[in-house]
Image (cartoon, rainbow, N blue to C red; front, side, top):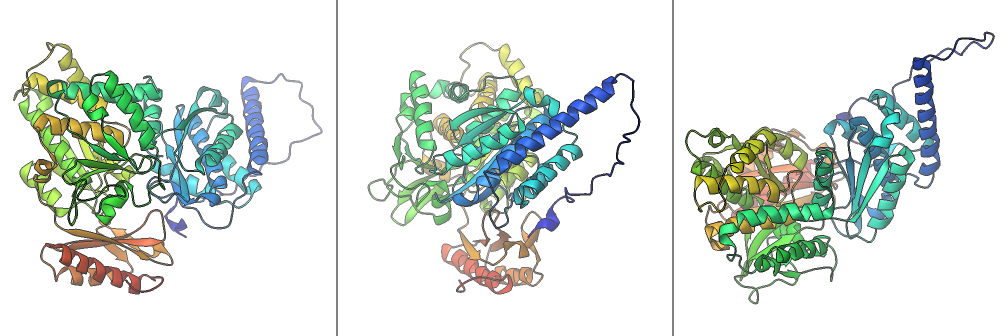
Length: 594
């Protein structure tokens, strides 16, 4: 299923060679070229032997595995073979690029019974899309012999020099799921079968792994302490004039890895003299089920507080929820009817407005003031947020398909690229050339610049480059930068929420037999097939003022996701339900109609 979207088969017939003549004996000494060919042949034979022996312990189960927007995800007991093979891919990718890569065992915000694997490229970003087809093919080949043949062909297609395997490494991390240690062992076996060094980070957040891969390849310190040092250093610089402005925070750790890692970050903050934020009250800190009615995904999708956070006891509290692997965050405060939510759209708006303010403070003749700034969104971005960014802030916006890999790539086109999905996954990217210019300007500045001055703006821009994870969206980093901006403005959540008023929205899921029957276009804002579906959506939307709706196949499960917004919550709910019923009827829905 879905194979038509992949690159041409890796299993093209290999060239046939004639049998060597055995009746002639050469007396010539081996040439350097001959010795190199012999070495390469020995390396390949050794790898095939090692891979054949190791893969026997990880037989592929029935079923098809798909590398989606966030890697492979499935029930944990189905994944050992896939994770083993991803270890092989991560090692080969490291050899091919001559740099460190990463492999993270996690299913992020999925239920605890699930698990998954994400691959990190040398940049610290997601696996190159050109290699996703390889990952799909290798994960789904049925036999050990077929696996070896496919890996051999990948090596030949990409011209991977196996003699370089001793100079690279793969960083391996995992989340808190009970299945993660066993799956990490499978990944380690795949890496070892190729003969590449493995750096076992053990329990880390997904953003920490991406950060460390990037830092390693940039020749920067790349251990967990270096990660905390960078975040704290940037936070200290951002809050130098607002050191005592932090207000109490309630943090929902989703019973995941974010809890213990927040504790480590809080210890570093205390040591640096920022005890206010370090004193955040942490709930859902491993004392319940991972991601079950807790975490950023639950809060954003259900628009209600997580377990252990409720009205009226937590009324007016400033709350933030992380997700299971701490790469998403959303802010909120409980209310009598649910909550006031500040999601990824609001985070993007807050940071975009702050950065625009900093650039405005620079002198008119400063080239840095003319930096290109853009905000990248998906179709899930609330229409009111787009209107604020383009109308009030006068910033460029761009819409991409769902998935961090698409947003990240688009954000790289700007000097300062801001992207946050509505679910709270995002970051701010600074081009190296821009940040180098900022650092050069800061080198000549006197200490302790006046708040609101051009000098203070330069220091803040430099600090943002340290506190904001430049590799991928990071909830711990996100908490620090949001808290710094709120302290700078002396704002509470109500002030932040007042930037603009969201249009009420609703998201639903429709179970279908095969999600691949839905094909989208125009950055997932319209349905290409089935052809009958988009006219039905258009007809439904036409009946609502400021109505908007779209559907897209999930990247992780056999469901179709429905999004709708309108002028009132009741109307948004009605529109979402109408569109969900159309999907169920036209796209092969399973079970009762919504």
